[in-house]
Image 1 (cartoon, rainbow, N blue to C red):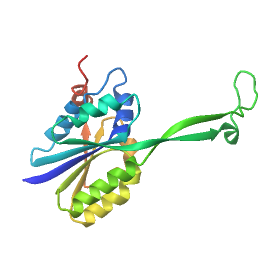
Image 2 (cartoon, rainbow, N blue to C red; image 1 turned 90 degrees about the horizontal axis):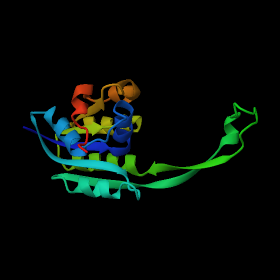
Image 3 (cartoon, helix red, strand yellow; image 1 turned 45 degrees about the vertical axis):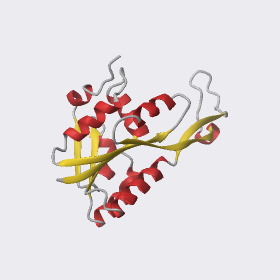
Length: 190
């Protein structure tokens, strides 16, 4: 039996969940179990969940860390100031140019953490197959390295977002789609 690891890009999966199932919260344990059920010939030894920790998700991440054979790896949030004047945005109501700046937060370190963990475990021969839950084309390079090392790399996506992962889909060994009926079973019970 092959040994496998699951690598979940938490913010990416969270965004996709809200896109395809906006009225409910995801139960991450059910989601992990659904992924595992797609691979009956794989013995999953660990799941990694990657995201940035915030004051609003600390409890959620603590609960994930309590799941058997699941570990959370966190990045950080960094403020980013955007000068709207550069984008020539005009107010529809008054016709004036918008010259404000806004500050948003961007996730830093998560993609690097995913790539490092995948490569570390590949070099240590910890898995035969890596299951990646993400759409991020930034992982194309690491998937190519993993394949060169003789590891299988498969992608898991929600139905309805596959078109947003074209480049990554073309560079993995296989893409597994979670159908709407399947991901409805991952809804958190209230």
